[in-house]
Image (cartoon, rainbow, N blue to C red; front, top):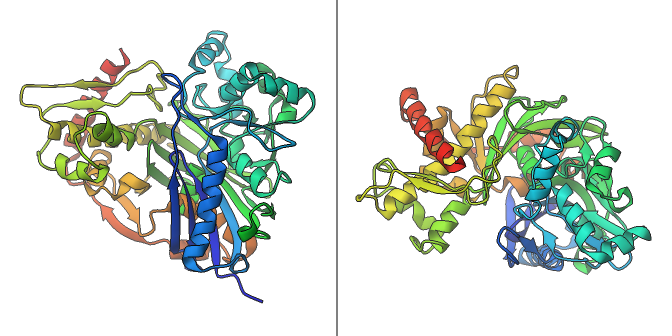
Length: 497
């Protein structure tokens, strides 16, 4: 009998589906990735085709095994991580989606959120879910589908409606409809789940008009949950780990003790701090969320999200034509010593934490006749570092009783930009640590599956495998950092007005 030598991580993201094979040293040995179409039916609307999400994820899983010459019997288990908050509805009997997925970036339900706030539901939602009421989360997306897709009501009346996030959709497809589940971290992002009681909340379900029968069973982050049956090449593999992308990255960064913080630089930026066994309800407009759950016991985190992180570089490329590919932004930004007083606030979809201003809009301030595209490129990179500094400052306020923050662990595509990482260290006045393996989202899912199946013995052995590739130390004074932040915050106030 062949002994398993690998863990397979499926990473279904906002712009691509990826599959990565990890060996016993937690090192990626093969990667397959496929991008897919972003659908924009109206201004502010963002959709995905659910079948495309499934098919691309299935295809890259098969391809990565073919690339490595690995069979299903050599893989100990599958870990799944996913873009969070994106809402999908489908027919329980046929597995066919009722409409396009409503992506986490979608703002069509902003008016619904404004109505709930005006009616005084803000505190109820915060106290139960740990979330700030916003169109970002799944609840109003599910409500929109239920109100606007006639088939949803018909199926709900027959107990044949499924409504879930991307993890639930993928597992349903992988198991040919046998499993309809989500894990506690993903459930905690819907705005329908009581993170203290550990259950779908009846009061919130009624408020949003979402039928409880349509929602998945909530399980731990650690499996195994079942086996793949719908893909011949993967048949029999245990589905053994499950977490939303940012929670997976927190685990992949081995932020396993309270007070440890990671930041992921992707389309948006997401910073999470491990807060231990007790949820910290934020006074600084951050989110309290479930980081992972084992044996029914949740581990919590504080989270802050920046809507436009690496996407601001995509805008320089696609919207303004300053660069031909995103990698060119670093050289362009480094061609000037500073921004010449320019600030760019990329509030293209409003501002996330700690502002939560869905009506803010992007601005460029401080323009002069001498401003060049290089200054704007540098201001764009600085905007990412400044937004993340706002998040960490809020975390320090909320979690002042935890051990002091001594470093920031970073990952995601934009973390490979040395200039941005140095900017981040300077403005935070903290070491910024980039790991050897920056695929930490997929790595976290692999860790969950590997521990669940006994492929890895314990967390201590995983922590020993975690290695730093480079540490960026602050290179400016604290006074200069504070002055830079003050200038940024003035620009943010202009964007909000």
